[in-house]
Amino acid sequence: MVKHAFKAVLALVLLFATLSFADFYLNVGTLQVGNENYMVYEFGPEFTVGPLTLGFTLTTYATDLTTGSFYFGYPGSSAPSTNILDGINITALGLDLGNVWFRYGRMRPITYGMGFVFSGYSSPNARTFDVGIRMGMLSAFAHIPYQLVQLSTFTFTQSDPVYTAVVSSKVSLFELSVFGGVDMDGLKEDAIATPLTYAAGVSLTTNVLGFSVGAEAGAQMWKDGTVGYGAFGGVFGDFGMLQFVAGPFYASDGFKPWLISKNYGFEKSQPDFGPDKYKLDLGYIANLALTFSPYGKVAVLLKGNFEGNLTLSGEGLINIPAIGGTNGLVLYGYLYDETPFEGGQFFDNNTLARLTIAYPVFSGFYAGIKYSWEDSQWKQTAFVGGTANF
Image (tube, rainbow, N blue to C red; front, side):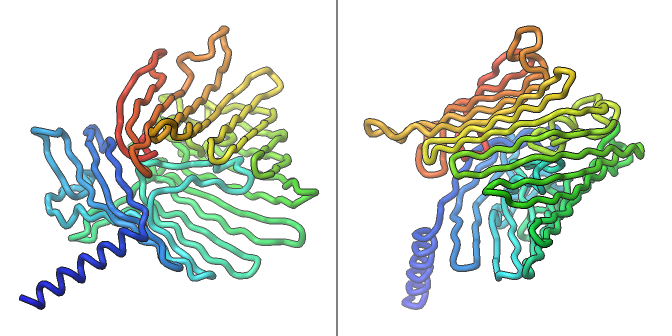
């Protein structure tokens, strides 16, 4: 009796110690797997002790709150689990030993070089493995999109189709980076349209009076064998509150600058996706970002060519401080338009836009309303959960 009581007290002490030094994660959201939509509920701690990071949640999936199917294991597997053990989801696992490090967890945006080929690419619901080495002036990194879906059977599944890697080295006064990636969707025999299969690039930059000046060249290979090439040269500056990049670019037939970005999933879903969509182009970019910590940030990218065609994208986050006993408010906006101001209209069928108004219930957990521009109109949805819902 005393022995069992001691074990119970010890377990409570360990649980209290874990939660005391941890960031508590709580999220309620939605996830589409195939043609089925699921409500996702997950909560649990994440903490870092020295070189070790560990996070885990209890995660459940439901097709309907009352009469639908209820799973503990990831429903995308061939046999979704109802075993509560599979509800224990490792959301973060990392170890940094200096020369060698690895991380498993929610996917972080991927940008290589000056961002001409890979620019902020991410998949919000994916968990991935990232592993790297550091050896003096040489470093290497590999991104492997696999996630653990059932703990009881130790089953993994691909969480995202894009695999990438980069090797960087200091060469005299320059930083040299060589990188590449493969989209596994482009290797499928039943792939829709003409998908991208491989992308690669090389960048060379140096620091001049606080500015990073350099050039980047890249290539994109498509399933039909078409290979497109591109190059960019410019200047990059990071001055704390202000960051910017600007310069000219060249793109041959079959190459699109900044293709593998936050909008890559949308681009792939279009029926005309393929090398024929992207024609010879010569133009310029200007990207400006302002950060006003802790009140928010805004970033705007303008891409144009000498024929007058423009692409405009932007992203902004505003944190309104707590006033009168409230927890404040968070406003988030996103815009992407390949034909801005065409026909005198700011929003049209080519516009991707969303606006989120979120109330922080407590740290990392929000309740709010999201407005999405779809089919030439604003559509409203409510949500509760983390920033992944923004």
